[in-house]
Each structure stands twice: as structure tokens, then as C-alpha cells.
Image (cartoon, rainbow, N blue to C red; front, side):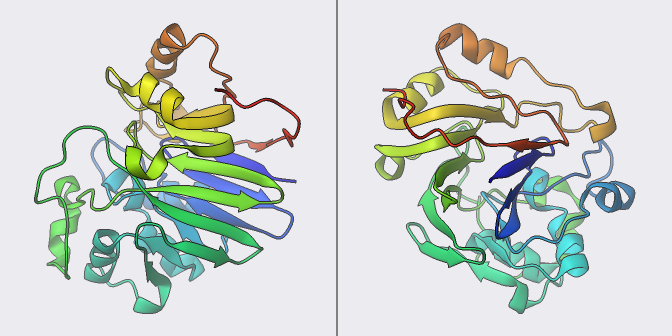
Length: 260
């Protein structure tokens, strides 16, 4: 049995028969403060076997130094993300730097393929870090550069999940990918995005994420109109919406047709 809990943005916990892991676990969500200790303590209560990070923007990565300090978990992330973590004092033993196309056999029998992806929009050339930086930089949101972007193909308990952290894809890496559940970031998606997903990916269920007002705390959780707009363009999209902060079972979809 596979269950998923959504914390808003692309923050997810995935529980299965042999363990639990997380993706992009950021919960601080405050307009003024980058991290909020009370929110971290309230919501990041599990001890995952490992954490996957799609990219290193603040709204994905900024709670990880505290979370690693609490749980001693392993973070699988980009070169840029690992540079940021080293800069703020995260031990090397907790970091695993990913490369595009890498296949990982992880605890609990979970297989992960780290696919090259893209953030929404054109990213600047100074989008990356190649070495440690002054830790004081990371008190401010702009210092949390996007870095290399991953989508994760995750195989566990007979299911295939594909998680993207942003409303974009890298077609050479993603074209022809198939999965049971597409967990797809749709934050402020732009023209051409609906065709990008329907023409390049094959899936049975579409789980939208990153379509909430993410500078509001989870106690004031509110969705934006990103999914409403997407359904207007793709009325037959097989959507499965996740309630926030609740464990939701992902049914076995064997025998069901995939889109396309």
C-alpha cells in the first residue's frame, strides 16, 4: 500500500509497506521569515528514510538544514543544492549529489531515476553554485538559486510515480515517460504547458501540486486558480486532488488505460 501526504508546494511524504521518504519538504511558508521554527516542529514530525529535492529554490530547500539536523536523513539533490547545504553547515555524510539520468536503489526497495527537467521560464546564467558560499547569503531568498532541476521517476510497490517540481519539462529527457501517477507542479503555468505534458507523458492519474498560496502558513492554506485554468484547457484530464496534510492512499491502477 502506498500513501501520500501533501504539505503544499511540492512538499510530499510518501509512505509504503517498507518505509517512508519525502520530496521537497518545505513547510515554513511565511511572507517575512524564510524559516519558521514553530512550523518546522509542528509539521516535519516524521523521520524519512531519505529526501529527494527537485531544485534548490527557497520554497523547496530552505527547511532542510534544520530537518537534517533533527533526523540525520540523507538528501539526494543537485550540485547547487548540495553547495548551499555545505555552505550552511550540513555535514557531507548527509548529502548525495545527483547527476542527470542516474538510477538509484534506495531503502525500502524504492527505485528512483533522476531525470533532467526544467524550471518554469528562462533561467539566468548565474542560476548555479559550484562551491561553498558565505552562509550569511542564505538569510535572503534570492540566494537560494534554482540550480539543476530534476524530475523523479519513482518505482515502488508495483506503482510508478513521476514527480515534477515546476510547470515545465525537458523534452529530450521526458518524452515518452509513462507512469501511473503524474505528480505535477502547475504553479502559474504558461501557454503551451498543457500540450507539453499531454504530448510527452503518458499517465493514469494527474496529481496537481504547487498551486497554493505558499507564503501563507499551512493553517491558512488556500489554493490558487492554476488547476481551474488547466481544467478549462484539458477538461478530460484524469485529476486526483490531494487534501492537504492528510494521508491519501494511491490505489493500484492496473488494468486502467493511460492517457494518450
